[in-house]
Image (cartoon, rainbow, N blue to C red; front, top):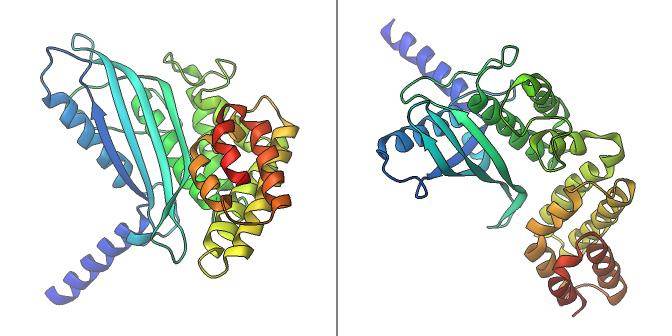
Length: 299
């Protein structure tokens, strides 16, 4: 009987582990805050990591090796012990392995400059989507679902749709929060703008590009470099289509910023002149500030 109970407990633990989707590394830099006990920042770092990694965010089943790799680097610029208030910014990155290669590619990377929240040391982090009254857990949940949804989009066409709808729901419910970063017309870089752009109908070519670039492009290069690069060239055309459809969206430029070195390495010394020139012209149109790098593609 005890043996059966042990087996059942082990099976439940295994199922619980498989449900956890994120492998998130959390770091908190508080060097700008002087005269404060470091303990609260260490506790906060551990609590955020546990909140992101130990929670089952979806009904999907993930093996340990399938978890979404991500990093969240918080820079705390101000901390007020009298009211437990923190302000700063967040640099985050989502990566995924490339099939049959010892290489991880960046799926998305961005800096959120509007981080503001209250936190009492050792107080449990709780998230309630329908009654959103805690800005810290709201923004953590936003990024958890965003990371998972973006990752799924790279494995199947618009595969993260259901999860990304959760991101939209969080943004809508967070409109009542007083902290910055959520407002529908706050600015074109905030949390609302990012998910709104990504899910907008006119930006569907961008989502199609995410799949073609990663799954049909990078993942194919280990077995057939030319076929993989051809798919990536086709994905750049989709990126151009998204940019032309909505020139004010920042997503195409953001993509070319964090994919810059990767794109240069894919084409420099490879492919035909016509292909390279077409890619160069598109990238220059989207992100002229990186022209010196894009020129390397032509070589």
